Length: 308
Image (cartoon, rainbow, N blue to C red; front, side, top):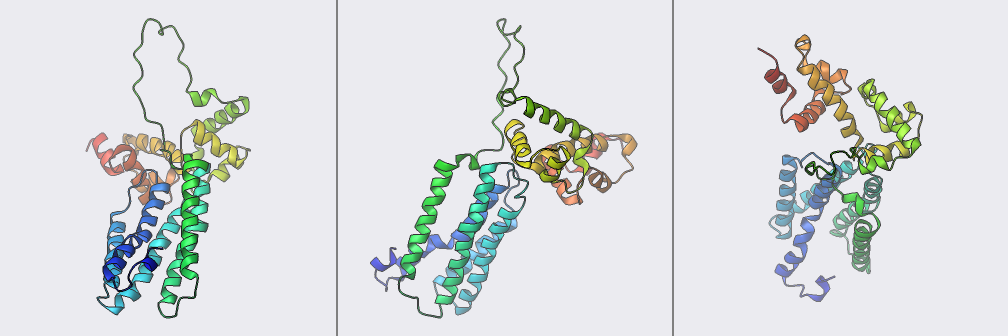
């Protein structure tokens, strides 16, 4: 919207206008990762790819070499594609209804429109831009930005809430409250009879090893408990405090793994065997989940607790 008001010969002004747009594909990927990955940091190699894309795009804007422009578009598509893949990953495992809706909205609206814009930029670099296209693009981008802000700030603010409330220290016991029975958490106090029954069945099912099924999804778990999926989602999210179903499963799986790794009778078992027994498909996700809990790898944990 600003470019028509400026002198076309001023390349420095053009660069200042274009500079923020260089960051959009990478920023989209970073935002989707922060939105969807509650505990995993953004990969270090991802920052390298984003930095390389910005450098190539900047070189293209400065017209250092014509081949740079041919490299820019695939890099942009790759970063946007990485953001779309991030939105799709573990979509079914996301227990926060508002965030799942936001994922789908971003996937369909924002992601798709960004792909269209990148492809259009490539096509219009070889053909004249039809009259009205820049104005249409400005209107569409402004509309999508306004809609996203309205969604996050007014319609669905819970989509960006933290995973769990901050743990505060319990108040000191006084003579006045020593005789009062410990009250249940506010979330569990709100359970009705049907929800409490479902919660009891869920806990019993997990204690009996229901989490060991490889590839268990919340839909399958709802079928096993003979309840509706959205009811189970709300129960685990709102009353147990988990935003992701896999993190809920990891709680039980890592508990069992910790016991078995510290058991001398199972010291002969490889770590991979234990990981497969408790429901993981491979060693990599098990190691990542275990290290998030104990800040040690399973091998380091076992070595520290078992004699040589």
